[in-house]
Image 1: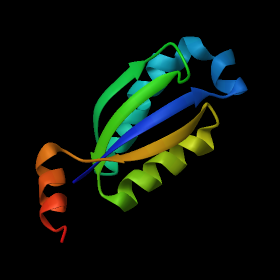
Image 2: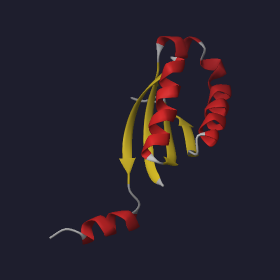
Image 3: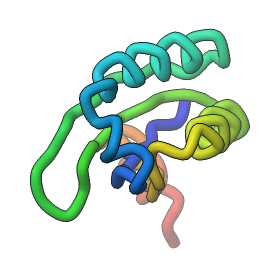
Image 4: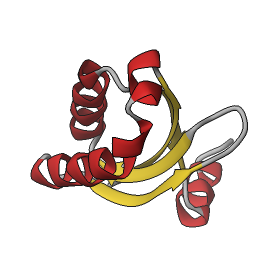
Length: 96
C-alpha cells in the first residue's frame, strides 16, 4: 500500500458549511473504506492548509477517492506521495 499526505483547503462552499466538516470527515472515511483506502489521520489545521490527511491505498483507489471528494465541492486538495524509512532505504539501495 502506498502512503499519501493530502493537504486540503476549504472552498467557499466548504467554509460556509464548516460546522458540518466533522460529519463530512466521517462520510469521507466510510467512502474510503469501501474503496479499499485506509484513512490514517484527519487533522484540522491553522495556517496555509485547513486540513491534513494521511491515507494508504493503491494509486488508483486513492486517486478515485480524491476525485470523488473533489466532486463534492467542499475542499481542494494537494497530494504528496510519502515513503516510510524502509521504503526509502529500498529506493536508495537501488542507486548506482
